[in-house]
Image (cartoon, rainbow, N blue to C red):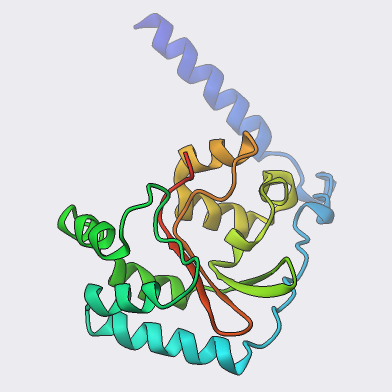
Amino acid sequence: MRHWVGLLLAICLTGCGNASRDPASAPAPDESLFETEAPTAPPELPDAVTATREELLEISGAGSIRRLSYKANAEPNFLSNFGGADHYAHWDLMRRTGWDPNLHLIELFKMPYGVRQVGQETWYIWPDLAARDPADLAPEKLSHRDQARLLTLIGPGGVQELAAGQPYPGERTAISESGSWRYFLHESAD
């Protein structure tokens, strides 16, 4: 009991000592800690990208995995998974295990997009953080807002994967400037 009384007295004295300081004599906070660079807006979506996005939203809004897989099959080299599974079979399995690709695709398209040059093409990628190089997703290169968004999107395990140099491990989708749907992924390559 005596130990607790001494501990409480020490805490009170320490706290009371701080409370009696004149706020005007306290050093001013370093304003540079609060500065954040205004994010640069990505370029407008080309008409072909907008048309493909709207078509995908219409298909997903109807909840049709079959139609979503028809759209994916019509795209050369479209990627839905790293195991080589048929798009429909993969998405059907995912939906039966609780991950509905239609709902997740709708949510992705609500997020900001980023732009990345892939060969001779420009790709529009959702979410915008998935368009960045892994090195550009290091905490010291992100605003506090983007750090929080990244953690929400990919979790602590995904952040560790990025720190190890792995590509973006979260859900992502891309449409090229010509309107080709390139990928819709929810997993890492490994």
